[in-house]
Length: 452
Image (cartoon, rainbow, N blue to C red; front, top):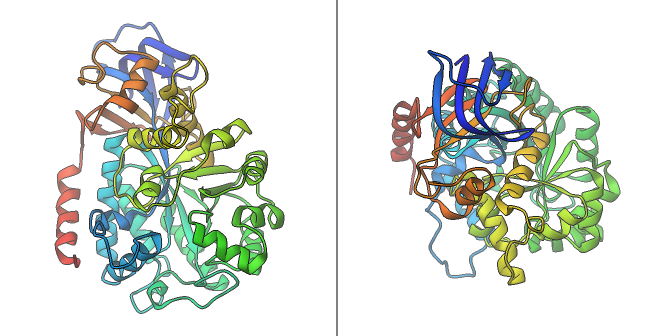
């Protein structure tokens, strides 16, 4: 797709009309506003905005969506959900993981996500043994990204323990486990798989202070001095209490005091921080990777976004468990959580300005930054990640500019995303991924094999 023409576009310079975009390979080569559509150029009727990076995904969990919505004999929580997850993944083969991930990535593209940070921790065979290729499972994630066309930041996860202070791992965690040396081999094998994807990024993901001890975390950061570092932190109060019992400090507090946390870092969730932790994390330059739908589904709590943003913090959004995949709904849930807690409206938008536009700008910039991707904006030289919203969707009729973003985020359901160009490839056309039928058939076959 060398050129396309759109009615309206959110460029780095602001909203413009009648925009001609020329693409060379995966990047934007030229942009001209106020231009007529030349003969033979594809004209996409709609509103073009930058694609958003999904900063945190566990793709295989898409297969679990809807299976853990029954109240158990004890109070349901993240911890009871996790036990169901362990039982479910014990049956997954590499073919299953590839099929499930490819379908999740198709759904992400159809929802307006153009890149994904795959926090990938399913490394081993069901008995805990490494596959002959130590990155067999990572290779399946790469294949899924290749089949869908989504941009990929692969974040292999280091997981060694079952609790803070180096507690022994549980049997259900056998598929996750590594030591430093086996993880080094996993990273190098993952790099080979990733080399076939243009523009892909390789980072590391020390899982959490429950799964990585202090010495291992320092060794990991020293061994990989470049690229993104993603880590779960302070998602659940149980995790915070366990960390205090081990170290005398809360998870975010401990990380900031003991590690050189900077712009390379993305701390996922950070739901439970003190005001001082919020300020200190904001000043570190790290990104808070928020997953509002999953956090709501698991009953994690509500991130205090206004406090963090007021201190200069940066945020991004992800789909985590993939129980629901939607750019608009992640941002809507983030804002609505603040409204419910404070019992006031429009908590995260600047006074007098569009809340939807502000949230969207935070997510697109924060996601690209956290994943180390050269995207997040429509500008010459940037990766051509372009989402075209359907201006004739009932929620958007008569809206343009920031009002269209407000309508998408707060007044629509599915079906607003009409076309998606990811890395210069036109992968969603008229609301459907170009490989949807084939990918869905593989996903359906995998789902029929897996236990319910």
